[in-house]
Length: 349
Image (cartoon, rainbow, N blue to C red; front, side, top):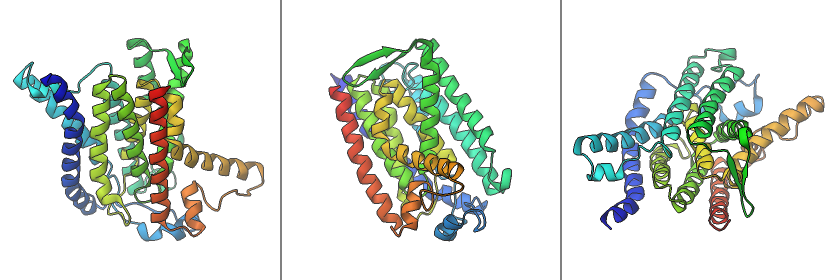
């Protein structure tokens, strides 16, 4: 009974610990980023006139702040595992340990891999290295993040022997080896969509909060308690970051944060066998990504004509006269409702 109560308390306790660590660590991280001039570069007026007009004032704001999220997550998980090794079986640290082959190894490992690729990309962007001073080439980023997804697909398919996807109210469908390319598609698409959404103060962070809350609830309902707790730790760390990222932002998340978050979100969808529900739970990400695809397609097929004033959608709304806080807060509200609806469908479906 004590162990059951302890496991029930664990998600909220570690959420609070992660929030405290993240909120306390952010001022130090911001000072370090400012000291080493790790400021965000804004595209020039010649390259992106609408973007420059809207966000020129944000140039120089420290970026890479999202590293606090995955660092705190690793710190919490690491302290528990070290405590388990030090105090042995039966200790609180062992009871709360999250080091689980089936539930947390891949999310944690691939989170770090995606975060490090994003960190390199952010750094190259800051020092104006790469094509047009914009960091890694698009094809190189795509190749690296696809490689990360391939590792996850290999682990799920060969080590965990997963090959099915769940369809709400229908059941599981065995994809056989097609599960591998499907897995890769889900991970890469989610990474990209979350990255596209990270364009306004607090926008990506708030929508990620609701998505991770949904997957914490879904994982818990399936008895995947370690995966659920990992979600709550990331929620706590993300909340600490958001304290300094809401408008007007003192720091930006950077690719090191959004790519790590996007990777873990996709893996939680695959781990809970609800990848199709991710479309609903993460619909704001889908819409933002789709707006970019529509814009690019229109310009190519219609001789440069655009559908939106600027893409993705949040920049179109900005250019249409919406204030940044209004866009962000309404997006948060929509994401909370969609996450709740997706959770309900997962529980009853």
